[in-house]
Each structure stands twice: as C-alpha cells, then as structure tokens.
Image (cartoon, rainbow, N blue to C red; front, side, top):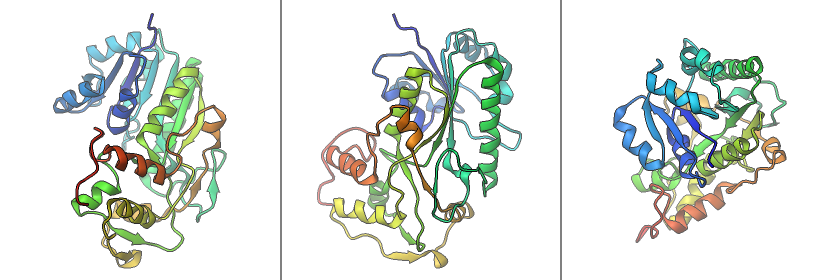
Length: 300
C-alpha cells in the first residue's frame, strides 16, 4: 500500500526532475502560476494545481493527505508567498511528516574563493539572497513549532536537459567570461531529485549543500562542452569589458567553493559529482536538449 503523498509548491524545472525520478509511483501534486504549464507538469507525473499567492479548495484538499511538502518558490518583498498564504493550513496538515525547502548557496555571500560548509556564516550580498536567509529561518521555525523535520537544500547553479552549455553552444548564446580565480559550483537537476528523494525516504531534517564536488571556472565548462561537440569554443571575454545584466554581474561578485559533506554524511551518493561526468552522459544519450535520449547532434 502506498502511504506517501507529495505536494510541491512551485513545480518548475527542479520539481519536474524530481517527479520524473518517482520510481515508486508516489502521488505528486504540484503548483504553477499558469494553467498553460499544466500539460508539462502532467507529462512529468505531477497532478497540476494553480497557485498565485492564495490557497484554493483544491490545494487545501491535496494538503489534507500530503505527507511530504516541498517548497520551491522564491521569496518576495512581502516574504515567502507559500508561508504567507498557507502557514495555518500547513501547521494543521494531519498527515504531514516532513518539509523540504529549496534554497540557494547564495545565502553564504562572498568568501573570496574559500571553502564553505553548512556551518559557515550566511552573509548574503544580494537582496534576493537575504530574502532566502529569512525564508530558511521561517521554515525552520515553523518546523520547530509543529514538531516536524525541515530540510533546507542549498542548491548551486542548476543545469540539466535543456539548460546547459551544450544547448548554449548550439543556439549561439554561449560565452566564455573570464574573471581571474572565479569559480562556481553546479548541480545537475537529477542530483537535486536524488537528494530530495533520499531525504524524504528517511524524513531527514537539517541544512544540506546540494552541490557538486568540483567548483570550477565557468569558461572551463563551455570549453569542455565545445570539445564534446567538436566545435571551437567562443573567444574568451574579460569580465571587466563584458556586457552583463546587473543580476548576471552580481553572481560574479560572489566567489566561494561549496562543500557537500553533510548530504553525503546523510547517505546520499551523487550521480554526477562533477560537470564532466554529467556532460559526458548528456552528450552520449542525447538528453542534453530536452531530456529525451537520442543520438548526439550530427555534424557538430
């Protein structure tokens, strides 16, 4: 008998990857802000519901039987929209066993390239990361109040099918920006899914950096993807002269190496511990475009 039921607030890219990894046919409900996205959710194995900051009767009905709640909605100026709308409903959920909140390694801010783990101080640089810190604390506090474990998953740069340097090279948007000594961590969406399922399996709470083993310069990733495709990588562009949006530029103002020992200590083993293994797999099975395995691109 299947006893679990999962509800995802904000079933976007990571939520759909999580649902596609549902090997036990656990019922999964998920919200989106647009009914136009319902079919994509259904194809991923998610029963779609509309949520735009207000609870509906349908959402309330689904929460009644939900055992595991995943929140993947960014906080806003007025706070976390899920907590604002659903705090009382969540506190009263009769079957709830566990809450998971998808956050970001941006909460750590800038460490000038030094290693950080879950014990490092959060000193966010951007306003969006400061709001994440506040949202994390809100969910942890709610968990303490209702006596349920809360897992905070701090994610690094998310990539996977349809969202990677191979796609960018194919469509002509790939760039090799070079800022000396700058590194970023990354995480394949399948490892976000794997970590979530692992934590759900044990109703495990805590703070976990869900990130790969190898913080690397961003230009190296583009170069590696180009080598797989057999194409010339785009020319290097010095960061100082690059045309960037304020948000893109802000990412380069944070430089750190993020360690992932806590999720490994909890028993999770990464499917793609570095970007090369992930790109090798995506290129070999053709899943880099949209997730459906096929032959690698003909003729480069």
